[in-house]
Image (cartoon, rainbow, N blue to C red; front, top):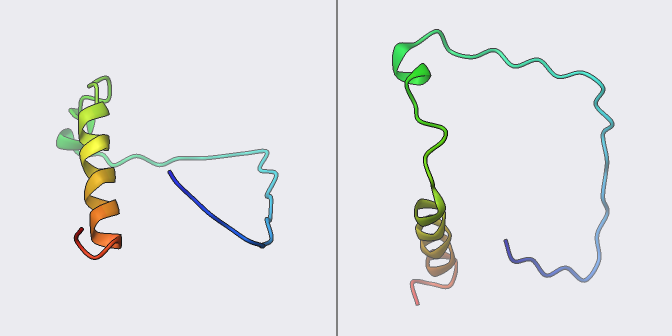
Length: 56
């Protein structure tokens, strides 16, 4: 990510507990999370940049 900021505030939340509830759906559990997604991420980041810059 690329970010420029002249001034701002940051807020931190110290979370000592986290619970995640996952879908009980076969399609969800069959997703391949080990897949190399570098190309998908690169493509999504480039698309976002071009849309933010007016399609240049």
